[in-house]
Each structure stands twice: as C-alpha cells, then as structure tokens.
Length: 100
Image 1 (cartoon, one colour):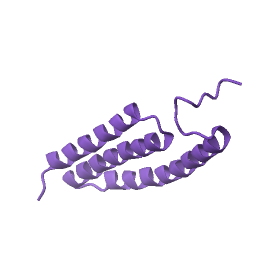
Image 2: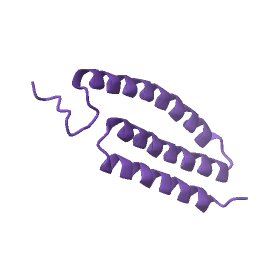
Image 3: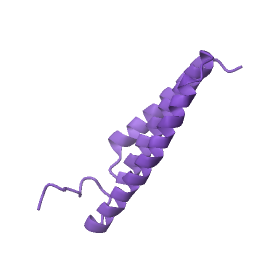
Image 4: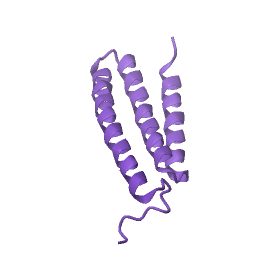
C-alpha cells in the first residue's frame, strides 16, 4: 500500500507546477491549463485523504468539483475563442480590454 505522504507529495508537486505555469506564462491557454492542473492537484489530495480516513465524503466532493470544472472549462474556452477572434492574439501582455 502506498503511504499517504506520497499522494500529498504528488499533489504538492502538481500544484507547484500549475502555479509556476500561471505565474510565468503569458499565453491564455497555457494559463488556463495550469489552473486546471492546480485544481486536479487539489482533487488528488482530497481523494487521498478520503481513502486514508475511510470516508466517501472527499470522493463525492471531487465528483462535484469535476462537474463544475467541466462547466468552467467550457465557459473559459468560449471566452478565449472570443478574445482570439476580437484581438487576434492570446498573449496577455497584448490584450488590454480597458482601452477603447
């Protein structure tokens, strides 16, 4: 059996990779994927703690998080496509929606 600390370590590594992606990248799609990576890192830790505590609460919570993440992904990608059609770029430094 794999100890709980390995799952938490994996979750921490995946979360840190997502955080680095959000902080260092300028492409909206890469930032969006990094946020999803961070969300999945939280899901890993919830499932690990749920299994460790012999409870189904964490796993049910992850199910609802994944359902909300699917809706968020659809809306986020629709916004990204709209930005790409209007500004013809996905670089965050070149997109400034407050200027007329």
